[in-house]
Amino acid sequence: MRRVRYQSGSLELLTGVKEDVWTFRYYGEGPDGRRRYRRLRVGTRNEYPTRTAAQKAVDALRCTINNQSLQTRSFSFGALIERYLREELPERFSTRVSYSSLLRRWIKPKWGDALLEEIKPMDVEHWLRPLPIAPKTKVNIRNLMHLLFECARRWDLTDRNPVELVRQGGKRRQTPRRLTVEEIRRLLIGLEDPCRLMVILAGCLGLRIGEILGLQWGDIDFLGGTLTVRRAVYQYHVGPAKTACSEAALPLAPEVLRVFEEWFGEAFYRSGSDYVLASKRGGPVDADKLRSEILQPAALRAGIGKIGWHTLRHSFATALDVAGARAKVAQELMRHANYSTTMDIYTGALERDKRETASRVAQALLAPKN
Image (cartoon, rainbow, N blue to C red):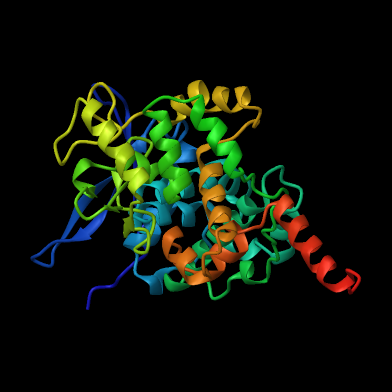
């Protein structure tokens, strides 16, 4: 029986035509059962400027190629991150971007050199607390670290997950901005298409900005009066909607349907697979540019203040509440997977509505009898 040994492999820098590339060589077993040298690409010299940086990435590869029973030495959290990025990063584009950003900006600089057994719950908690970021972002960091340790447990690199004991609340620092019906009307007066249509879609249907950008003419049933969300655009990347619940058919009010019909008459791209809000080249429009150059200046002129696209989705949820929509109807129109998301995060009565309701209660209880 052949003796199996732990493989350290070798790290080499190969000179390329456009850029130098770090590679990792090790022994692998071929289809015939014989051992042969294999080579894996680690990354470019631009990604890993020094051998030390490349070596940390190689630790994750060593962890992968060696049998778990041979893992006799400790692994750094940085090596765990590299293996996670290589093997477990979710396929959804926006999630990949978000996770990669959190790892690169916050988690890896602090914990990359620490060994798995060195990371303690209170150390993580004390590190998170003073970070100058939103509570929700801190929760995302905490949850991502928890996910990494769960991967380490599954890979038999550790038998503990210290992040289970890390406390981190996600309460918002500020209540999300919500516009009144009158404010939205003032905003629409100062806008032209396509920005005006985008505001209508967000304010009247509660569509997320990525869903608005991903709309194609084939998604609109003019005869049936419905709109079906099938995709979303994030950083010019077209992918599925946020969740399975997000991909739904929504009823179109006659007023909204009429807006679509008017825009269809003006649009240059009008086939079923063309984007409703297409740029001059036929791709999705640049929402960030429209927000900064058109939406926000129009909001300032209307005396509304600074807003973003998601402000309109919050406003739609509150408008549903003001209109007396039942909670289940609101959840389905908002296309939330969880009922609590609709009620706890988005729906909130405006200050004026709360004051009027409190006044009616006081009048009913305290008004003098005739």
